[in-house]
Length: 367
Image (cartoon, rainbow, N blue to C red; front, top):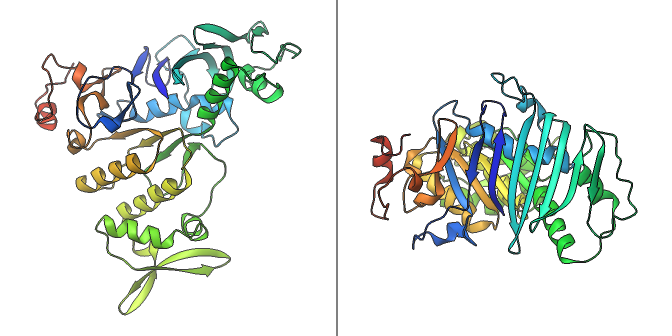
């Protein structure tokens, strides 16, 4: 799981910004949102242009150089903060696997060019590389005969070791493998009705075709019905692709020709729900941009109940500031280039009975 994330000089974040998912409290409600003392499911709020999307891009920067999964480099230019004279962007991740901490730090000059890279497992530095001077080391057992001079600042030394080594079967190497597997299965997607995403897989496919091919059309209809969207669906092959249609008393229509923006967003959400079953970490940006507030709550519950992934949402919907949906240590506010949980933004002891939305609108969590 991701425990803590820091980034400095990235896009609109000139100064270091920290997302700490380990500062949980002892609330005795919504305990399924916490795992091993770490936030398993949380939501980030913030005003327009505060940087909610950029936090997602920053967290998923790791996908760009450690995996061969889907990238979206065009979204992260300009890369470094334009108010800063420093060109280097610095990232620092803390993960936990089987009770062991994994600290991965690196800096880049642009989305593809690495400057330095360090991996620490259980307090021991096991991989380090200086791309400016082309020197580094690796202490993982099984890499003793590996050429450690890579002379390519677009190739991660960590990725190079993972792809070119036969690692011994020991505790440290097993944690290293879990780290690589976690990053390889991270997924970021957007609420919009076109399928842009980062990580987890590669390429694109028709949502309708995918639902039908996976024999999930009936389940998709039940999913929509449960969310109070009454419809009867069937499929038909058109130009070699399966398309979904809606049946009416006096006719039929292509699903996407009659679906609202919110229903199309639900189709995208459902697509990822059935396709990302092995996702490790999911970041859903503006996930409820087209949803009624009650529907937002249903979608949150759906993904928390149906996946084992660690999930972070971003939203403007203050109705989610609700102890029946989340809890104060899972509700984060991005403001003044900082991210803090609601419970850390007030001296008041927050209880389940508190109206967090009302407190937020009254400025109780302003810094």
